[in-house]
Length: 166
Image (cartoon, rainbow, N blue to C red; front, side, top):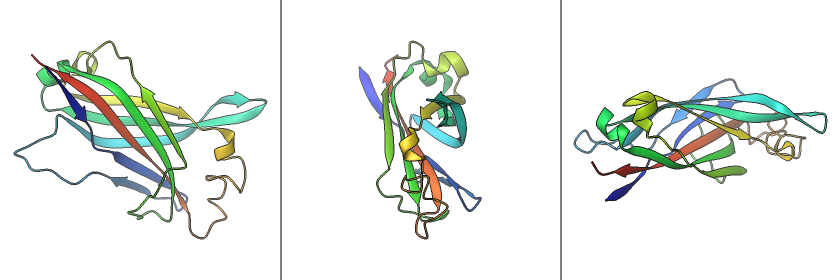
């Protein structure tokens, strides 16, 4: 029997105002812990290379994810992830609205989470941001320094995995 596990979306916003915001799904009771728990998510915007002589940027994410046990981690295989990019009104915004960019990626992992990291460990993800998203004032990220309503940049990571039976 296979059970689909969906990890709650966890987001980190890097704000133009110099703050870091971490948001999580609603807390859950100790009686029913989730099969996977994304405890932290860190991200940086980095130069990924160049395109037609211009710098090409992307986001590099590092999530600290825990399974309920090492035995369960050995049976958990990631199947897909989604990175959604947002421009928000401020560092404490609670409604991020629709993302200006979303990357949906089906994974083809050959090993379980437990085989590479035990019950808890880091997972890394990358998304190259097309130049039209940061290439000028009219772009979502290019407008950050000029907009009075949208001042911060944030992203959300969703990870899906299959939990196999013992």
